[in-house]
Amino acid sequence: MPTTILIDPVTRIEGHARISIYLDEAGEVSDARFHVTEFRGFERFCLGRPFWEMPAITARICGICPVSHILASARAGDAILAVNLPPAAEKLRRLMNLAQIVQSHTLSVFHLSGPDLFLGFESDPARRNIFGLIAAEPELARAGIKLRQFGQELIERLGGRKIHPAWAVPGGVRSGLADADRAAVAAALPAARATAREALARFKGALPGFSEEVASYGRFASLFLAMVGEHGTWEHYGGQLRIMDSQGHILADHVPPEEYAELIGETAEDWSYLKFPYYRPYGYPDGSYRVGPLARLNVCRSFGTPLADAELVEMRRRAGGGPVTASFFYHYARLIEILGSLELIERLLDDPELSARRLRAEADVNRLDAVGCSEAPRGTLFHHYRVDERGLLTYVNLIIATGQNNAAMNRTVAQIAGRYLRGDRLDEGLLNRVEGGIRAFDPCLSCSTHAIGIPALTARLYGPAGQLLDEVAR
Image (tube, rainbow, N blue to C red; front, side, top):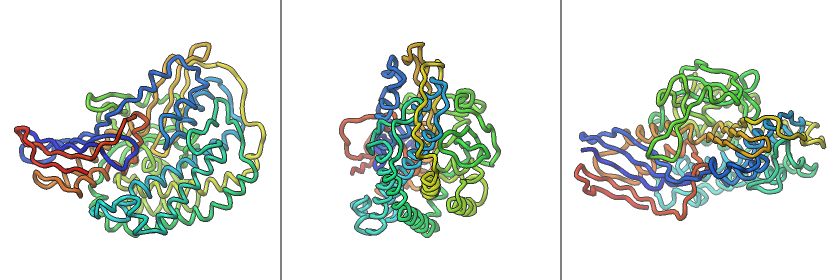
């Protein structure tokens, strides 16, 4: 009879989930499941709403990545209107998305995964948290807090608030960036860039000590999907889709996001509320793919900024050349994207067109079917809307980055458990390592979740007859 290990909930991620690990009769790991246990229902309760409202509504999907949903939704609205944005509006949207990448990646690196990366996976669980990191590495922790603050304040200067800014709308944006705000952001850039470079140096210095994690935290062949720019450079807004395999072969290239349904299918499993997208030509599960910072750096030819490009070359060299298949390197990729985003922010701040006053194109419903796509911090995000002649929604499909990583997260849990589980007993180190594999993907489960209360973490191991063999609780 098989044995099941249950970890419920997973901690230090955005949202709520549990993990089940299944052992066969020989005591070996046979399977693992990452259960997303909550349901939001945005695709249903938005039906009948005017598409104009969608950026503000879908922003409420999450308090960590509202900008991502605002921009994807606004882009779908642009397509319904069939308009070209004023150049300043597009550049301002790009600026906000870069700020979102900085603040979200910083939260992941310093607050959620930082205790593991800088204190160690086997460190005392009582201090393996942000407060323990502050006590052990006060300068590093303080710099991380300020770096996230930089991104949040840029969002606030653009949209009027740090969370859920009612700013991007179909056809453009509501307001520009005041000269005083522009100068303040520029003045804060050198310190932010210094923190990003220091964090990269610290991570690279510690990397040799994580050789086991690199080998077992989700290292496997898969496909990768992300947007790229016109010449194959890194892109986060306004690009086209590229799918690459783990050998570096491009399977689909420069596919307009509105044709995503020709590339991506979706299926479901009865043990999760999170969907399982896949590459249609390969079917499910063979067509499972990864998105997010690692995928973006794998599929792009170059980042397009000097500092980030130098780091990208080094990361690829450390990984042996070619696409990087070790999911532990998601942390590495986030740090490179923070640095590159700061370079792009500096470039945009120097653009005189950013001061233009025309920020919105005026139109009415001109198309009844539209797709908005952008690169959220966690990966490619799709908003697909259909409307009637009055602009009321008749169909909503949201494909979230975390869902696209769903199959990969399940494989990662199984790989880690197979490497670190010993016998029929659980320990704190194993639990944290399994969770650490999930944290590498930085899942944002609020995009499909909402829970009341946060129960204690309990993992139970049951024997073949259903008897309780071991229990660990936090």
